[in-house]
Image (tube, rainbow, N blue to C red; front, side, top):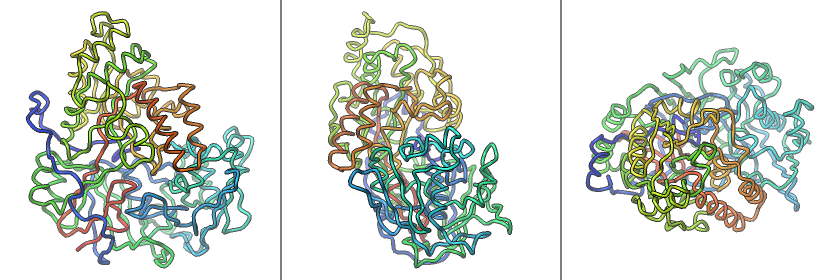
Length: 586
């Protein structure tokens, strides 16, 4: 999830430049764990909250939403999918669905019953959600005009998807709606994350009425997002024709109560009367305003600057929430660019990286534990992949091991133990603290002979034009990161390492990994429906990707959220962000 993340992680904290040159004593704020009680979901109804952000949502359309900030600002408070996420849950909660999916013995037929008492916002306030609306929602994610990033990853095994994509069919034959309250998914093979409902908790299952939306979807780029109808407790204000009026790109997004919403049909309490998201803020100024002000919270940035965080943990601890978010940060090494087609060179880089110093650029220990492999704590497969200790020698030390790096370089054919090839392209972020991490990494790798053509851009440009674009041939991407799509290892490993994830633009597979053995292992794991066996299989996948050093994970992320003293914030474990449907004013 960028601008909080597209599951690609974005700008959070600030560190003074002096830390980079000096090593600077300790490892930053040492406090960890939850600073304020963000698990108490009780609250008081009424009032308005202002959410300060640095950027904007990347889009309004539920069919293309894949960014944490979009989930926080729109999907969770304003829309209802088949399944949703209660704040403290690690498995999805039935939302439009009346219960968890029913799966046939062979795992290829999944049936979901749908509520018959949920209605849309204006201008369709007289219409009830039916199964055909969810069917179209799942079909439109394959339309080029919608631009969904995960459709192929989780839903391509539905029968008839290939025919729809090739233009041989106008709908997906494998999605059936025998009546208005029943949805049946016929699969070519078992899909674990569909059977458990995990993938069906993504915004792709937010209902979209076909007769209303298809005119917008017929455009080169769908404009449905600007005309969407809402099913959740909140909505973005619109006019009589349904055109959204409560959104100004990059500046302001407003949520008000949805008059069509019936609290008796929903698990969300929806305490607040109004929520306003304001973009274009400086992180430091916004953090100070939030901590000293009233009725405010952070939006698309996860942590305040280090000096502010230290002070807040000391004097305003009940205004800070520190929670593991089952995400990670990593350095991506492009396997299509020499010398990173050589596994020994990649392992040398992993050994040469001082992960403690990189963590320091984000604020130190509070920001999360040092990663020893890819899957973070809290995700099935983490323990099977080595737990906190890890497995591989080049990932064992949190500090740089230059002797080990030299030995791997010699294995790769560099007799001196130092890289001696041409300069390589490294592209990092120019905003704090991503810029600090990029500069620190360049310095670390120069110690083993690497030279770089070093360029820095905004996080969006890095993803869109460089690290997310295979033709750019970026050798090293220092600001990589990924957050879960749900509490399952597939959502972390498949997007980043599957050959199918390589896309012309915004590709999550920045290392350009297309390994037949790995692809096969990912496919086998994806079909497994038994949780214990699934965790074992994904633990083995983690060992493959960590052992081959396609990327170098350096931190398992914590989310750090802040709010004004009069805000009773509740963090949703799924997003690691404030849950606007549960947060209230004191």
